[in-house]
Length: 113
Length: 116
Image (cartoon, rainbow over all chains, first blue to last red; front, top):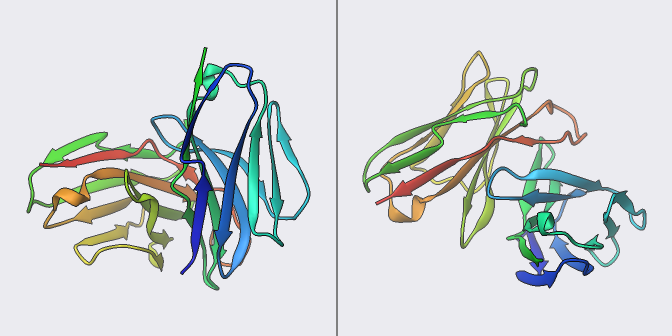
């Protein structure tokens, strides 16, 4: 059965800390891996990763994919209270007719001032 | 604001009842996806429609059904509601149609369903 597993389930850090969120997957028809940020409302798109070893970067956030070991990490440096959210990892599973998203259960990040 | 709208924002109903959730996709998007997010299951894909036709099914119960209308808005019907159906229901849309290219899905604000 296809699955996406995120760790840790939650973490609490202080402003300025750096955090690393993990996502591992077992998906038969892997196409891409996506990261979303969810703050009490709809998930908002952060990154899409398709190729191994190529880092995607947006400000203090960065992410990389390892297709051999089947995982991705999301790094957040110099965390701010506004980074507090649930971070979701999803894998695009191409089943032949359409692309489906398989989500992990998320990592809850709380950044304390 | 993603451009995807969902109504109602919050719905409270009793077990055994039936509800309809409504979604209007972004202008120009032909595909609509429905997701259920509960505390213990995370975000689960339910069903996808493309230009009025069902395209893919996920973990959707037989008590649930959906449709997409000619104006491309979609409705998710939940019947014989149980306590465990309480969740946040998201709709997403994309330009994706046939072919293997993945196009970003834009999520609506969600409808929170509470079954008492």
